[in-house]
Amino acid sequence: MAATEAIFTDNARVTLRAAYPETPALVDHRLTEHPLLDNAALAELARSMRPEDVEYNRGDLPVGIDPADVPDNGLGIMETLENIETNGSWMVLKFIEQAPAYRDLLHETLAEIEPIVREITGQMMNPEGFIFVSSPGAVTPYHMDPEHNILLQIRGSKTMTVFPADDEELAPSEAHEAFHEGGHRNLQWRDDFAARGRAFELTPGKAIYVPVKAPHWVKNGPQASLSLSITWRSEWVYREKYARTFNATLRRLGLNPAPPKRFPHQNHVKSLAWRTIDKARRTLTRQS
Image (cartoon, rainbow, N blue to C red):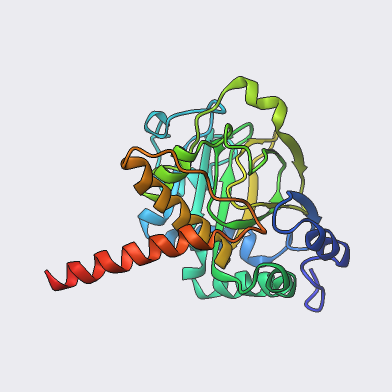
């Protein structure tokens, strides 16, 4: 990538504008040769990270698995990273913006699409970056993520299968509510879900926009893979979260509340209700 070249092509920004925020879409990027994403730089980054910000495990997983059943790979962080081609593992370096150089890379990349995002969902909030490294054939199980996300493929290939974010059978309300109360991202999988997904092939120079909480799973290709995930949140994301948390409270009272609606509905009433309850709780806690 030349110093003056944009990271996202003109066509990529047109495609993103048409898809954002509710439709998954493939776009092109120019980050494959960035020096912060070569092996030496990644090893330095991994050595500098807090252990709690590095997640890794065996990669030979089924599409659906309880997180408690995910097996450890029996290796350390650096051994996993440096031998990823042969050790059958999956790894993610989380919150890479804690390192100044990677924070600059994240902000530079997001800045190119910020005008599109701001026009549709408002301010980009809480930008975060993640680097995924995985062995040939590794599987990322069926799950959902709470952010707007663009996954940029840097090396190797993978297939991401994305499912509709508005299908409550694929991700039931109870799963959303548990997630926002500290539960895991993994979702329960049924084989009959497969036909509802759309498979996207990711090769170096391709990226995919994934809508907030759109369930998905990933199968790595025949070589080791490196991907960069750039994420952000919006006011809509937080309102949906607060509405889900309010619903969890109603469910504990024996009610069966309707789920929040997808964008462009803003879920103002339930969001405000939860914020009011939460503020009152925190006030009472401080006074007690």
